[in-house]
Image (tube, rainbow, N blue to C red; front, side, top):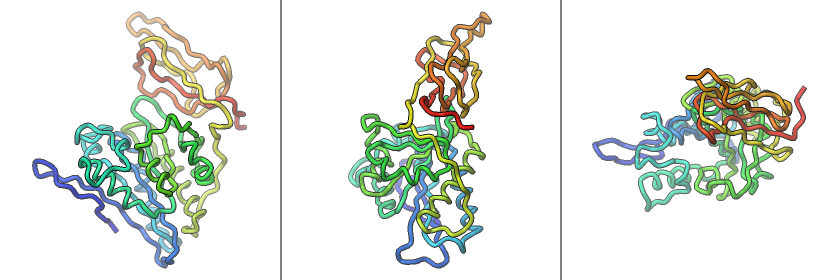
Length: 314
Protein backbone atom coordinates (compact mmCIF):
# COMPACT_ATOMS: atom_id res chain seq x y z
CA UNK A 1 0.00 0.00 0.00
CA UNK A 2 1.43 3.34 -1.06
CA UNK A 3 1.32 5.98 1.69
CA UNK A 4 2.24 9.65 1.37
CA UNK A 5 4.27 10.81 4.37
CA UNK A 6 5.29 14.26 3.09
CA UNK A 7 3.34 16.62 0.85
CA UNK A 8 4.38 20.27 0.74
CA UNK A 9 3.50 23.07 -1.61
CA UNK A 10 6.41 24.60 -3.53
CA UNK A 11 6.64 27.70 -5.74
CA UNK A 12 5.23 27.57 -9.29
CA UNK A 13 2.55 25.07 -8.28
CA UNK A 14 4.98 22.21 -7.64
CA UNK A 15 4.95 19.84 -4.66
CA UNK A 16 7.48 17.99 -2.56
CA UNK A 17 6.06 14.48 -2.20
CA UNK A 18 7.75 11.63 -0.32
CA UNK A 19 6.03 8.24 -0.32
CA UNK A 20 6.54 4.79 1.10
CA UNK A 21 5.29 1.35 0.15
CA UNK A 22 4.00 -0.59 3.18
CA UNK A 23 4.00 -4.36 2.63
CA UNK A 24 2.46 -6.50 5.36
CA UNK A 25 2.08 -10.20 5.92
CA UNK A 26 -1.23 -11.97 5.50
CA UNK A 27 -1.42 -12.89 9.19
CA UNK A 28 -0.03 -9.94 11.13
CA UNK A 29 0.56 -10.47 14.85
CA UNK A 30 0.28 -7.52 17.25
CA UNK A 31 3.95 -7.96 18.21
CA UNK A 32 5.18 -8.44 14.62
CA UNK A 33 8.47 -6.80 13.68
CA UNK A 34 8.76 -3.80 11.36
CA UNK A 35 11.65 -3.20 8.98
CA UNK A 36 12.23 0.16 7.28
CA UNK A 37 14.29 0.41 4.08
CA UNK A 38 15.17 3.97 3.09
CA UNK A 39 17.21 5.31 0.18
CA UNK A 40 17.37 8.17 -2.29
CA UNK A 41 18.47 10.90 0.12
CA UNK A 42 21.16 11.73 -2.46
CA UNK A 43 19.74 12.21 -5.94
CA UNK A 44 22.77 10.80 -7.76
CA UNK A 45 22.75 7.50 -5.85
CA UNK A 46 20.59 4.96 -7.67
CA UNK A 47 21.82 1.62 -6.30
CA UNK A 48 19.08 1.70 -3.66
CA UNK A 49 16.36 2.01 -6.30
CA UNK A 50 17.11 -1.48 -7.57
CA UNK A 51 17.21 -2.83 -4.02
CA UNK A 52 13.77 -1.35 -3.31
CA UNK A 53 12.36 -2.86 -6.50
CA UNK A 54 13.83 -6.31 -5.93
CA UNK A 55 12.81 -6.42 -2.26
CA UNK A 56 9.22 -5.46 -3.08
CA UNK A 57 9.10 -7.99 -5.92
CA UNK A 58 10.30 -10.87 -3.76
CA UNK A 59 7.98 -9.94 -0.90
CA UNK A 60 4.94 -9.89 -3.17
CA UNK A 61 5.87 -13.30 -4.55
CA UNK A 62 6.15 -14.78 -1.06
CA UNK A 63 3.65 -12.78 0.96
CA UNK A 64 2.52 -15.94 2.76
CA UNK A 65 5.98 -16.14 4.40
CA UNK A 66 5.88 -12.57 5.75
CA UNK A 67 4.64 -12.12 9.30
CA UNK A 68 5.64 -8.49 9.83
CA UNK A 69 5.71 -5.09 8.14
CA UNK A 70 8.24 -3.84 5.59
CA UNK A 71 8.19 -0.12 4.83
CA UNK A 72 10.09 0.88 1.67
CA UNK A 73 11.01 4.55 1.18
CA UNK A 74 12.65 4.72 -2.27
CA UNK A 75 13.14 8.49 -2.62
CA UNK A 76 13.81 10.74 0.37
CA UNK A 77 15.10 13.38 -2.05
CA UNK A 78 12.76 13.03 -5.05
CA UNK A 79 13.60 16.46 -6.45
CA UNK A 80 17.31 15.63 -6.46
CA UNK A 81 16.61 12.35 -8.24
CA UNK A 82 14.53 14.20 -10.84
CA UNK A 83 17.41 16.57 -11.71
CA UNK A 84 20.19 13.99 -11.18
CA UNK A 85 22.07 15.80 -8.44
CA UNK A 86 23.26 14.78 -4.98
CA UNK A 87 21.67 17.65 -3.09
CA UNK A 88 18.10 18.90 -3.03
CA UNK A 89 17.34 21.73 -5.48
CA UNK A 90 15.66 23.47 -2.53
CA UNK A 91 18.66 25.54 -1.50
CA UNK A 92 21.25 23.02 -2.73
CA UNK A 93 21.06 21.29 0.67
CA UNK A 94 22.33 17.78 1.43
CA UNK A 95 19.21 15.90 2.55
CA UNK A 96 21.31 13.66 4.76
CA UNK A 97 22.59 16.63 6.76
CA UNK A 98 19.27 18.01 8.04
CA UNK A 99 18.15 15.24 10.41
CA UNK A 100 16.39 14.98 12.78
CA UNK A 101 14.81 18.08 11.26
CA UNK A 102 12.36 20.45 12.88
CA UNK A 103 8.59 20.98 12.53
CA UNK A 104 9.27 24.73 12.59
CA UNK A 105 12.34 24.78 10.34
CA UNK A 106 12.90 25.08 6.61
CA UNK A 107 10.90 22.97 4.17
CA UNK A 108 13.58 20.28 4.16
CA UNK A 109 13.87 20.33 7.95
CA UNK A 110 10.11 19.91 8.19
CA UNK A 111 10.26 17.02 5.72
CA UNK A 112 13.11 15.43 7.70
CA UNK A 113 11.09 15.71 10.93
CA UNK A 114 8.15 13.93 9.30
CA UNK A 115 10.42 11.17 8.00
CA UNK A 116 11.90 10.62 11.47
CA UNK A 117 8.42 10.58 12.99
CA UNK A 118 7.27 7.98 10.46
CA UNK A 119 10.31 5.78 11.16
CA UNK A 120 9.78 5.82 14.93
CA UNK A 121 8.93 2.39 16.27
CA UNK A 122 10.71 0.40 13.55
CA UNK A 123 12.71 -2.59 14.79
CA UNK A 124 15.45 -1.86 12.26
CA UNK A 125 16.17 0.82 9.67
CA UNK A 126 18.43 0.23 6.65
CA UNK A 127 19.71 3.45 5.06
CA UNK A 128 21.04 2.52 1.62
CA UNK A 129 23.58 4.64 -0.24
CA UNK A 130 25.82 4.42 -3.30
CA UNK A 131 29.20 6.01 -3.78
CA UNK A 132 29.67 9.13 -5.89
CA UNK A 133 30.67 9.04 -9.57
CA UNK A 134 34.39 9.12 -8.72
CA UNK A 135 34.97 5.87 -6.79
CA UNK A 136 33.39 2.42 -6.67
CA UNK A 137 32.64 0.76 -3.33
CA UNK A 138 32.24 -2.92 -2.49
CA UNK A 139 29.02 -3.78 -0.61
CA UNK A 140 29.64 -2.68 2.96
CA UNK A 141 27.93 -1.59 6.16
CA UNK A 142 29.15 1.53 7.94
CA UNK A 143 28.65 1.92 11.67
CA UNK A 144 29.42 4.52 14.29
CA UNK A 145 31.50 3.06 17.10
CA UNK A 146 28.92 4.41 19.57
CA UNK A 147 26.32 1.96 18.27
CA UNK A 148 28.53 -0.78 16.81
CA UNK A 149 27.99 -3.38 19.54
CA UNK A 150 24.22 -3.25 19.09
CA UNK A 151 24.31 -3.14 15.29
CA UNK A 152 27.07 -5.62 14.44
CA UNK A 153 24.82 -8.75 14.64
CA UNK A 154 22.57 -7.25 11.94
CA UNK A 155 25.52 -6.01 9.87
CA UNK A 156 27.11 -9.46 9.73
CA UNK A 157 23.95 -10.86 8.08
CA UNK A 158 23.69 -8.22 5.34
CA UNK A 159 25.74 -10.23 2.82
CA UNK A 160 28.36 -7.49 2.50
CA UNK A 161 32.10 -7.86 2.08
CA UNK A 162 33.04 -5.46 4.85
CA UNK A 163 31.78 -3.72 7.97
CA UNK A 164 33.47 -0.35 8.49
CA UNK A 165 33.25 1.04 12.02
CA UNK A 166 33.92 4.77 12.09
CA UNK A 167 35.25 6.75 15.04
CA UNK A 168 32.67 8.95 16.73
CA UNK A 169 34.56 12.14 15.84
CA UNK A 170 34.16 11.42 12.09
CA UNK A 171 30.39 10.73 12.21
CA UNK A 172 27.97 13.45 11.09
CA UNK A 173 25.33 13.85 13.78
CA UNK A 174 22.87 15.31 11.26
CA UNK A 175 22.48 12.07 9.28
CA UNK A 176 19.35 9.95 9.26
CA UNK A 177 21.17 6.94 10.72
CA UNK A 178 22.54 8.93 13.66
CA UNK A 179 19.14 10.49 14.31
CA UNK A 180 17.42 7.10 14.40
CA UNK A 181 20.11 5.37 16.48
CA UNK A 182 19.95 8.23 18.97
CA UNK A 183 16.20 7.63 19.27
CA UNK A 184 16.56 3.93 19.93
CA UNK A 185 15.79 2.71 16.40
CA UNK A 186 18.72 0.55 15.21
CA UNK A 187 19.92 1.95 11.88
CA UNK A 188 22.57 0.58 9.51
CA UNK A 189 24.16 2.51 6.65
CA UNK A 190 24.68 0.28 3.61
CA UNK A 191 27.08 1.54 0.92
CA UNK A 192 27.71 -0.05 -2.49
CA UNK A 193 28.52 0.54 -6.11
CA UNK A 194 29.00 3.86 -7.84
CA UNK A 195 26.98 7.04 -8.40
CA UNK A 196 24.41 7.38 -11.21
CA UNK A 197 24.56 3.66 -11.93
CA UNK A 198 22.90 0.42 -10.86
CA UNK A 199 24.92 -2.72 -10.09
CA UNK A 200 22.34 -5.56 -10.07
CA UNK A 201 24.86 -8.12 -8.79
CA UNK A 202 25.68 -5.99 -5.75
CA UNK A 203 22.04 -5.03 -5.27
CA UNK A 204 20.84 -8.63 -5.35
CA UNK A 205 23.38 -9.53 -2.69
CA UNK A 206 22.05 -6.80 -0.42
CA UNK A 207 18.48 -8.01 -0.97
CA UNK A 208 19.60 -11.51 0.07
CA UNK A 209 21.02 -9.88 3.19
CA UNK A 210 17.75 -8.07 3.86
CA UNK A 211 15.86 -11.37 3.90
CA UNK A 212 18.48 -12.83 6.26
CA UNK A 213 17.89 -9.95 8.66
CA UNK A 214 14.12 -10.37 8.33
CA UNK A 215 14.56 -14.00 9.32
CA UNK A 216 16.56 -12.90 12.39
CA UNK A 217 13.76 -10.48 13.30
CA UNK A 218 11.26 -13.36 13.12
CA UNK A 219 9.24 -11.79 10.31
CA UNK A 220 10.23 -14.02 7.36
CA UNK A 221 9.75 -17.79 7.16
CA UNK A 222 10.57 -18.21 3.49
CA UNK A 223 13.79 -18.91 1.65
CA UNK A 224 16.89 -17.00 2.66
CA UNK A 225 20.53 -17.41 1.72
CA UNK A 226 23.46 -18.29 3.92
CA UNK A 227 26.17 -15.65 3.81
CA UNK A 228 29.87 -15.52 4.57
CA UNK A 229 31.25 -13.38 7.34
CA UNK A 230 32.41 -9.90 6.24
CA UNK A 231 35.77 -8.40 7.07
CA UNK A 232 35.46 -5.94 9.97
CA UNK A 233 37.52 -2.75 9.92
CA UNK A 234 38.35 -2.99 13.62
CA UNK A 235 40.29 -6.17 12.81
CA UNK A 236 42.72 -4.07 10.75
CA UNK A 237 43.36 -0.53 9.61
CA UNK A 238 42.05 1.48 6.65
CA UNK A 239 44.73 2.97 4.40
CA UNK A 240 43.83 5.87 2.09
CA UNK A 241 45.68 6.10 -1.25
CA UNK A 242 45.66 9.55 -2.88
CA UNK A 243 47.08 11.07 -6.04
CA UNK A 244 50.28 13.10 -5.77
CA UNK A 245 49.94 14.62 -9.26
CA UNK A 246 47.32 15.59 -11.80
CA UNK A 247 46.58 13.28 -14.74
CA UNK A 248 44.65 10.20 -15.80
CA UNK A 249 44.53 7.23 -13.41
CA UNK A 250 44.88 3.76 -14.95
CA UNK A 251 44.29 1.02 -12.36
CA UNK A 252 46.35 -2.16 -12.39
CA UNK A 253 44.72 -3.81 -9.38
CA UNK A 254 41.16 -5.16 -9.34
CA UNK A 255 38.41 -3.85 -7.13
CA UNK A 256 37.34 -6.11 -4.24
CA UNK A 257 40.56 -8.12 -4.45
CA UNK A 258 43.35 -8.72 -1.97
CA UNK A 259 46.58 -6.91 -2.83
CA UNK A 260 50.00 -7.70 -1.38
CA UNK A 261 52.52 -5.20 -0.10
CA UNK A 262 54.59 -3.81 -2.97
CA UNK A 263 52.11 -4.76 -5.69
CA UNK A 264 51.05 -2.09 -8.14
CA UNK A 265 47.68 -0.39 -7.67
CA UNK A 266 47.92 1.71 -10.82
CA UNK A 267 49.59 4.67 -12.46
CA UNK A 268 48.81 8.28 -13.29
CA UNK A 269 49.77 9.24 -16.82
CA UNK A 270 50.26 12.43 -18.81
CA UNK A 271 48.03 11.98 -21.85
CA UNK A 272 49.62 14.71 -23.99
CA UNK A 273 53.24 13.61 -23.48
CA UNK A 274 52.58 9.88 -23.27
CA UNK A 275 54.50 9.55 -20.01
CA UNK A 276 53.90 8.03 -16.60
CA UNK A 277 53.80 10.72 -13.91
CA UNK A 278 53.26 8.51 -10.86
CA UNK A 279 53.22 4.79 -10.10
CA UNK A 280 51.17 3.78 -7.07
CA UNK A 281 52.06 0.74 -4.98
CA UNK A 282 50.49 -0.83 -1.92
CA UNK A 283 52.42 -0.02 1.25
CA UNK A 284 50.64 -2.83 3.09
CA UNK A 285 48.72 -5.97 2.13
CA UNK A 286 44.94 -5.88 2.32
CA UNK A 287 41.53 -5.75 0.65
CA UNK A 288 40.90 -3.02 -1.96
CA UNK A 289 37.38 -2.00 -0.99
CA UNK A 290 37.36 1.39 -2.73
CA UNK A 291 38.83 2.01 -6.19
CA UNK A 292 38.82 5.06 -8.44
CA UNK A 293 36.13 4.87 -11.13
CA UNK A 294 36.45 8.30 -12.79
CA UNK A 295 39.87 8.39 -14.51
CA UNK A 296 40.79 12.09 -14.39
CA UNK A 297 42.44 13.02 -11.10
CA UNK A 298 44.00 15.99 -9.39
CA UNK A 299 46.55 16.12 -6.62
CA UNK A 300 44.95 14.80 -3.43
CA UNK A 301 42.17 12.87 -5.21
CA UNK A 302 41.16 9.57 -3.62
CA UNK A 303 42.41 6.60 -5.67
CA UNK A 304 41.78 3.66 -3.37
CA UNK A 305 41.10 2.53 0.17
CA UNK A 306 42.62 -0.68 1.49
CA UNK A 307 41.63 -2.61 4.61
CA UNK A 308 45.03 -3.75 5.86
CA UNK A 309 45.93 -6.14 8.64
CA UNK A 310 43.51 -8.88 7.58
CA UNK A 311 44.18 -12.31 6.13
CA UNK A 312 43.50 -13.07 2.47
CA UNK A 313 40.40 -15.21 1.97
CA UNK A 314 41.20 -18.51 0.28
